[in-house]
Image (tube, rainbow, N blue to C red; front, top):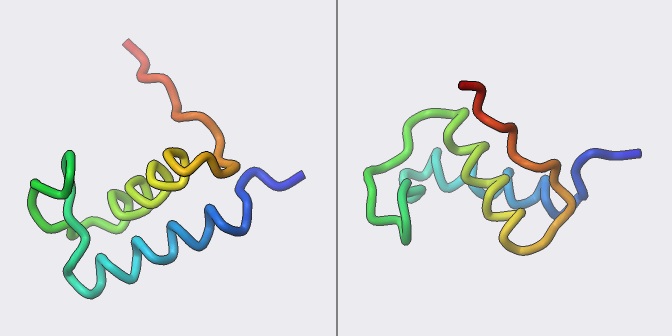
Length: 64
């Protein structure tokens, strides 16, 4: 069974393209700076997919 749906993968792919183009912004409503990190771009793509209700695993809990 797949962990991620095809449409969720497309969301991550589009976030990566926006990062390369320089239009991907971090923060609430894109008010932060331009995203340079590959990992951060993937995380933004996954969170956008989660908001749309696509099949993506839950976020990892932070260890204290």
